[in-house]
Amino acid sequence: MKEEAEATVRTAKAVLQELVVVVSLVRTLTDSFGSASDLYRKLKQKSRSRSNIREEPERRDGDSFRSRRGSHTGYYHGRRPQVRWSHSGKDDYSNSDDELICTSSVQVKAEYDRGYRKLGEPFARGDLITQNQLQSQIIQLQQTLLNIHQDLLLSTYVSPSSSHSHLARLIQTTRTARAASIIALDMQYQRMLPRIPPKSPELLIPGAFPLPLRGHHENSHATGRRRSRIRKKRNSSSSSSSCSDPPNFIERPEPVPKPTPRPHGNKLFCVYARDLQHKPRLPLIDNFKDGGDNMCQYCHSYIATRPGKAWEIIKDRDKKFDKHTHTLSRAFLVKTRFVIKSHRESGGFACVLCARLNKSDTACRSIGELIHHLWEEHTSDELEEEEDIVEC
Image (tube, rainbow, N blue to C red; front, top):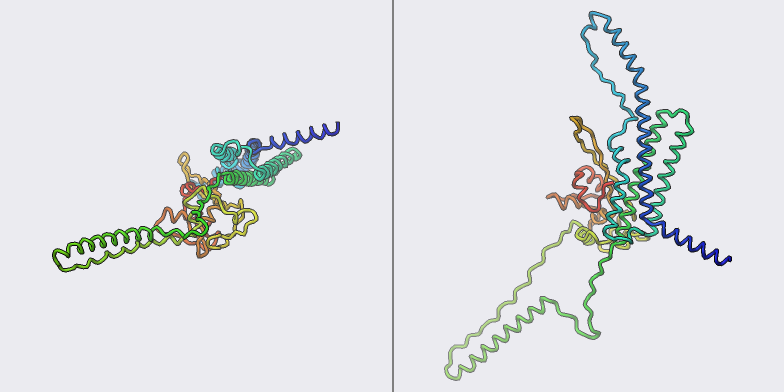
């Protein structure tokens, strides 16, 4: 009986491990984002109602003050107040926060669908690394939601400062969970891509001579053909000399043409960086993975990155809605692969977008300068077209 029970427990554990797959974790994560969106609307509605309550006595006081001023004549006659008071303070949040909360579920689901369309069931099952990362984000997000709900239930009166604190904590936790989940799914996609096998060199038989160069082989054939033509002409001239003795003309061999020089390569980037630029599906070498030394195997440059690291860029853009201009923010994550494919052989970095889109190149001494250049000099549309920069 004991052995049967232990076997049953092991079977149940195996079934549970099979159920904890990436697709189920993504579904749980999107449900948590939905709960965060509902809580965000609830907190924001309470914040607006309190601000309206505070504005009502102020408005009554202002009306009574204006009525007292209107009763006087003379100096105050016909004057109008020149200052407009706006009560939109910390309780009002921009449209970017609304977009962050409401679109987190859609963006994580879109990243999952991209990998599933390409890789199918293996991507849906995932690996242990992605499962642990998604579980960690689910736990943190649900813990934040639970703490805020407990504060709202146990507190008889929620002050404006505490309401603002709840909103800020919810926005920050949602932003972190969304960015980390998108990066985790993208890293799993990179790990599961089929690796391109390297080209095997030509095998030589032991003891055989090395293969001749292609240019040397063609030149030797051309030289042999010219020598055979000269030999035939000499034989024909020697046979005809028995009848008559014309002057002997010595035919000089044609000069061997010099090989055309190869054009100089682009020295702006390292050789490995150019390979990453021209081959979007080429994975990173083991030096830039867990346990690696972060050294380029071609130019031996050290790049201060780590696996899964990303840099966030927030671009603001003014957009008109009903004759009113609002500032919309878009957040982008610069992945480690973009930084590695931007390094130079002589040290430092160069902007890949400038090399591709502009007439002049931009060199940066550090990763911070490169990220600052992307934020300051390039538009949201240019960042969106880069495959190693994702919008979050």
